[in-house]
Amino acid sequence: MRDTPRHLFLDEALASRAYEDLALPIGYQQTISQPYIVARMTEILIEDRN
Image 1 (cartoon, one colour):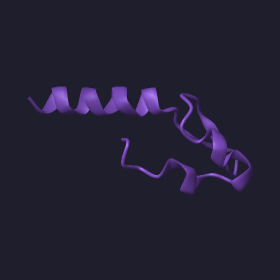
Image 2 (cartoon, helix red, strand yellow):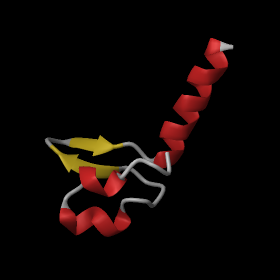
Image 3 (cartoon, one colour):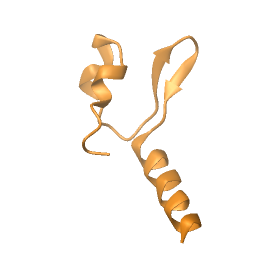
Image 4 (spheres, helix red, strand yellow):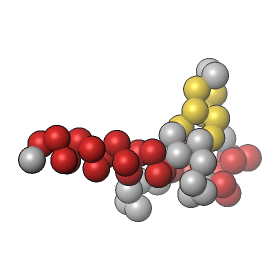
């Protein structure tokens, strides 16, 4: 997840908050998930494969 340039998916006004552990708006009434949630979902997927 450290390799994902999260700031590129946000409005410039929110770019400075891109790496905080919170969901942020990306437009069209949608949000980018908070990093913890993405990490947890990834862990669950990996566990399910094993």
